[in-house]
Image: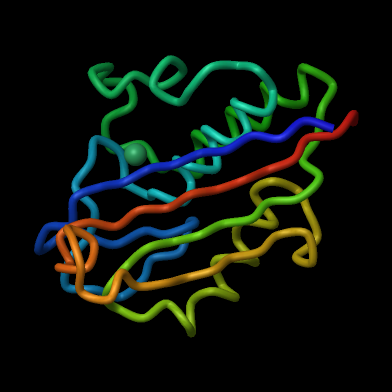
Length: 157
Ligand code: MG
């Protein structure tokens, strides 16, 4: 079994949609970024690439490459899943921590879990999403940023 970890953080700005795990969460602020700024999916990509020994998301989808501008992060996950399968591997489970002050994600966690499970081809019982605030502290606590960390396991396909 292989373990991979991923982390991502994006600045939050007014007037951008907030995408988390492929789900659009109603919010005044959304993630600034070259793509749709989905921190969960970017961290998922890095965790999958890490477990597969395939580097990081920046090597595969450089953000100074205009081909990736405005691309949906779900496409990145699909691409990465293809690379994982090419190596003869498949995900065993996925565990997510998302750090966001507002809105509370309580009601969105199950939607995110469902979407993520579909994207990586796992039953929902093998995908977990945890959400927490930073109690008003730091950039995330002040509502200026959103972050996610992800752990995945890969097993032989
Ligand atoms: Mg990112």
